[in-house]
Length: 180
Ligand SMILES: [Zn+2]
Image (cartoon, rainbow, N blue to C red):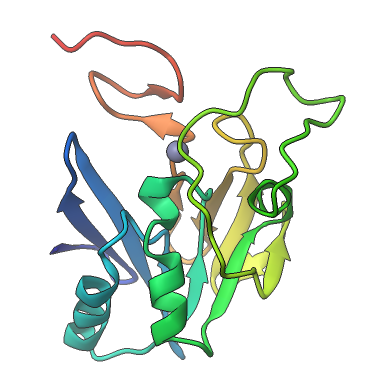
């Protein structure tokens, strides 16, 4: 797993999956690290090694959304780090619990993407405006009904999960673009 630092507070962890690279992120805080997303399953040992290399404990496991390429290693990390907070949007937590119904105000389209079976319940359900350490929670529904972005108030970094895509140019999720 490649660790790529971005400024003082952010470290990108990138691993190539079957089709495309999948990233998760460490955000440094005074008490340790917040992990934003966990990547695919099978990442837990690699992520724990990366934290050890940074010399900081993982205090929080936060998800932009619980698709398989973002939450795939959540259960394994929770087993290894039972005291770490588990943070997920309340809206997507409802889906993880098995309720796939849509609210009247939401687009009435079937849920997209791969939703793994997760056994780890959130210790806190997030909503727009909440804080996770130095990160402000911003609701960015669309890719999933409860998708979240995390804005680092210290340096303006923004972690958006799949709300935006960069393949063949920056675009809002689900916009179809052809590679050149
Ligand atoms: Zn996704």
